[in-house]
Amino acid sequence: MKEAYHVARPRLAALSLPGRNPRAISYLPRPGQGRIRTQAQALIRVQAQLRARTQSTLTGTNTNTNTGTPRPKRSRLLPKLILAGALSALAYYLLQPDKARTLNPTRFVPYTVTSKSPVSPTSFIISLRPQHPSPSLPYLTPAGSWWDFQWSVQVKQPEIQIQREYTPLPPPAADDDGSRPDELRFFVRKVEGGEVSSYLSRKAEGDTVELRLGERGFAFNYLDRREKSEVVCLAGGTGVATAMQVAHAVLGDPSRVHPDTRVRILWAVRRRSDVQSSPPPPPRGGTKSQGGTLEGDVDGATPITRELLAMKARYGKALEVRLAVDEEGTDFGPSDLRDALALPAKAGRGVRPRYSAELPPVIAAACAENAPSVPERLPPGAAPANLRRPVFVCGPEGFVERYAGRLVRDAAGGVWRTGGLLGDLNARYGNGEAWLVLGFP
Image 1 (cartoon, helix red, strand yellow):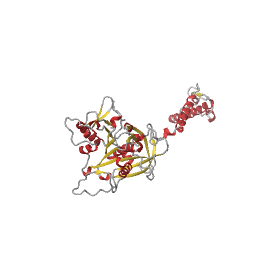
Image 2 (cartoon, rainbow, N blue to C red):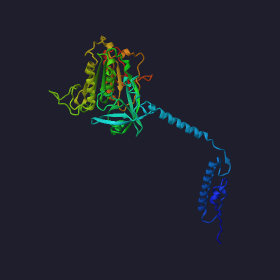
Image 3 (cartoon, rainbow, N blue to C red):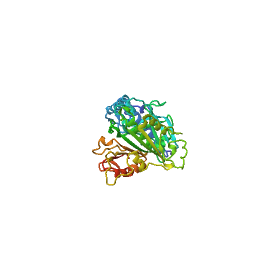
Image 4 (cartoon, rainbow, N blue to C red):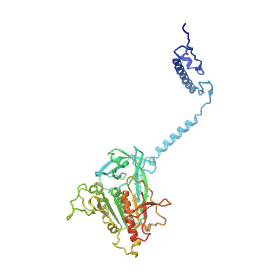
C-alpha cells in the first residue's frame, strides 16, 4: 500500500499577514522527497521573513520571525547624524576650493600636461597647468613668494602609489610666446628603475599628472642682497634646474640686487646631446674638448640650453655659465673650483690666508630623482652674515658626494656632508668655521 501524504500549502494572502508564523507550515514525509521538501521549507521560510521585515518597516515595529516577539524600535538619530556630517563635509569642500584644489602640501591636485620638449634621447622638459586655476597659487603670491626659497614639488605615480620630488624651473621671460605664470615646468631625465621619471616620460599633451607641494629648502632671505654676494652652483645633469632656480632667486629682482653680485653655474653633463642636438667641430690641434663658457649663439641648442642662454641675456654679466662634458673628457676639478671661488693656486702651509674668513659656506643639495627630501637645517649660530658667498651642489648622489662629501647624520637629527673636493679645499684654506655643509639627501 502506498504511503499517503499531505502538504498544508499556505495561501499567498496568508503569507503577507503580519504575525503569521511560517513555522505553522508542515509537511508529511514522502519517500525520496526529503531533500525537495527541505528546500521548499527553506524557500517559504525566507519569503515569510522578507514579508515580515517589510511589514515591520511600514508599521514601525520589528518582529522576530523565529519567535514572534517584537523588538525595540531602532533609533533613527544615528543615520541622520551621519548624513548631516557627510553634507557638512561636502559643503566645506565646495566652499573652500583654494584649499582643496590649489597646489598645497597635504593633498595631491590635478595638473594637465600642456607640452613636452625633448632635450636629449633620455631627458625632456614637461610643462603642467593646474586644472583649477587660482590667483592664490603659492608660486604666484608676491608676499612670502616661494621663489625666495629653494623649493620642490612632489609628483605622484598613481599606479604604484609612490611620489618623487622635482625642482621647478624658473618662469620664462614675460615676453615668451605661449607662457603662462601658473604653469610649472620640470627638467626630467628618464632613469633606469626610476618609476616616476618613466611614468612622466609616458605622458602626452592633455594627460593628467597629480602634484603636491614639497618642502621649502634654503631661504635666500639669508643673503643680504644689499651687500655684494658671490654665489656658486655646481650642477650635475638635471640638477641644473636647481642652479637656475638659485640664479632666478638671487638676480630676479633688480631692485633688490647689489650691482656687483655674481652667480656662477658650473654645469656638468654626461653627453654633448644634453647641450646641443648637433655637436660642434673638434678643436684645433686635438680632439679633446675643453668645455668652456656657455654664451652667445649655440648651434643646435637644446631647450634647456636655450633657457640658460635666455637667463644670461636677461642678467648680463651677473650670470656666468661654465660647461663640462664627461664623454669629451672634461670635468670640474680642484683648479676649476679654486677659480670659481676666487682662491689662489697655493695656500701657505701653516699660515692662514688673509681671505680665509671670506670663504663661502657650502650648501650641498642632493637632487637625485629617486632621493627623498629632508628639510634644510641651519646649525646653531649660523648667521645671515656667514651666507654672503654660498656654494650650492646639486645633482645625482654620486656627483654631490664627489664635491660635497658623504652624508653624516648627527645625534640631533641634522644632515651634514663631510669630505669631497670642497671639503679638501676647506681643509687647505679654511679656518674650520667659514664652511657650512647642509644636506638634502
